[in-house]
Amino acid sequence: MGGCVSLDLSCDQTLKQTCNCLFGDGNYIHMVKAYLDALETTMQELRERRDYLLTRASIQEDRRLERLAQVEGWLSRVASIDSQFGFGATFSDRFFGFGFFGQPYLR
Image (cartoon, rainbow, N blue to C red; front, side):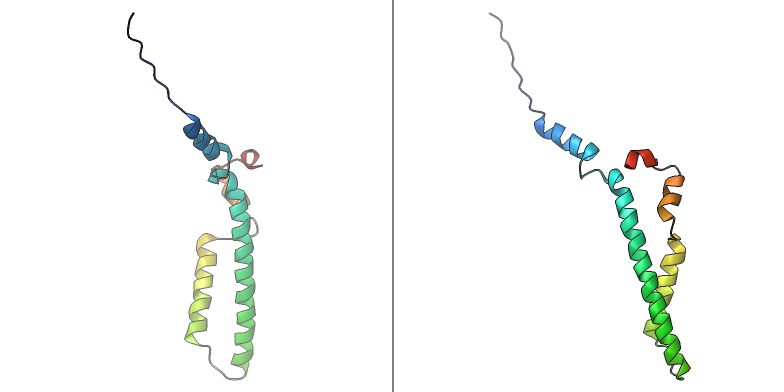
C-alpha cells in the first residue's frame, strides 16, 4: 500500500524534431551540395551579364561616349564578388576538398 508515482512523458514531438534535423529538410548539411550548385549557376549568370554589359560599354566607348559611374560601380562590385569568393567551375569540389564535408555523406 505504498504510493506509486506515475510519470508519463511524451517524446513524440522531440523525436520528430530530432529526426527532421538529422535526416529531413531541416538538415542543411545534406542541402549544401544543392545550395552550392544553385550558387554556381547564379554566379555564371552574373558573369554572363557582366560580359554582356562590357560588350555594350565597349561599343558605346567606340562611339566616343563615356562609361557611366553606375556601370563602373556595378562592374567593380561583380569583380569583387568573383575574386573574393573565387567562384569557379569547380567551387563545390574545392569546398568539399577542404574536408568540411565528405562527398559520400551528401549523395
